[in-house]
Amino acid sequence: MTEPTTRKRHTADDRTRRKGPLLECDHLVRRFGDRTAVADVSLAVAAGETYGLLGPNGAGKTTTIKMVCGLLRPDGGSVRVEGRRVRTSGGGAKRMIGYVPQDIALYPDLSVRENLRFFGRLYLSGKRELDRRVREVLALIDLTGRAEDRVESLSGGMRRRLNIGAALVHSPALLILDEPTVGVDPQSRHAIMSSVHRFGRESVAVLYTTHYMEEAERLCDRIGIIDQGRLIAEGTARELVALVAERDRVLLSASGDLEAYAARCGELSRVDGASVTGDHHDTVQAVVRDARSLLPDLLDLAHRSGVHVRGVEIVEPDLEAVFLHLTGTALRE
Image (cartoon, rainbow, N blue to C red; front, side, top):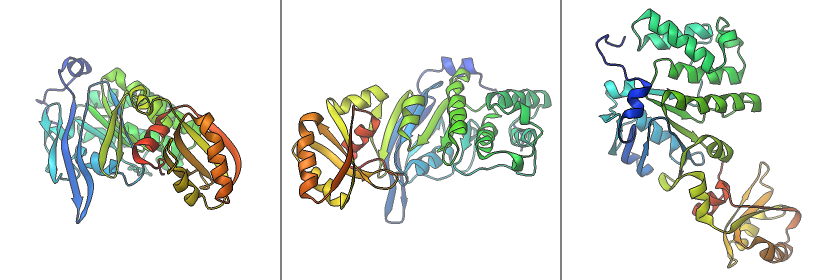
């Protein structure tokens, strides 16, 4: 299927001049049987803006973006891209979207260039335009030197970048990236994040889902925090951090019954939330007011709870503290 030659193509300047948000999600609801996966989520993203949807696995991020892409029909609410309603049955609005799923969606026995040409031909009818876009995307994802290599020979990080390129080759107005850095090495992760930084030059609206706080802080103009299917806060990183005001985050690496200790910490008058976190579930983190004066109480409580504290770190307010303050739990992977 090719794009009709009579269809007007929207340039970056067109998108910049357009008034109002490029993406509009209004009161989205999606249920699976008795479970409500997304409950009344509304958000908007402007051209050239990167909007981060931040939340743990199972929070409703992927369900939300599948409704935005038209892959899932909402049980309530609507999605519009450049004023046109997105429907599961197809239509012009879906052609304005580039979707990068969590799983790699490429042909491993084709070359990098062949993959980009294949996906580009689904939308672009002119050979000259297709060749130009393939060259531009290869440069954008820094794979020009590997253009003739088969996908199966690429590293995991390179495949992730090509996965993004496949969604960009038709010059979408809206790019949706669902956890694009999961499972990649630090160098590839940095390359992917650097590419996302450049998308604003084409006035592409970016909806970026992640559960990595540092990615949201570094990449996103605005951030929406989603948990249990609800958008519980929204704003710039600075605005969200202001929600916790003078609260600090205290990290106590320890051993013992940490779940019980975290629950008892949460009962203290100046503690707004506490939970067990860390790669080995060996750290209790708490959002507190006046951490330095409260620290002796936390250590005394640890002693009385039979918990051995090996180290203490006090962190100034950040997005992790915001999430812990709003939900009472740490951001879970």
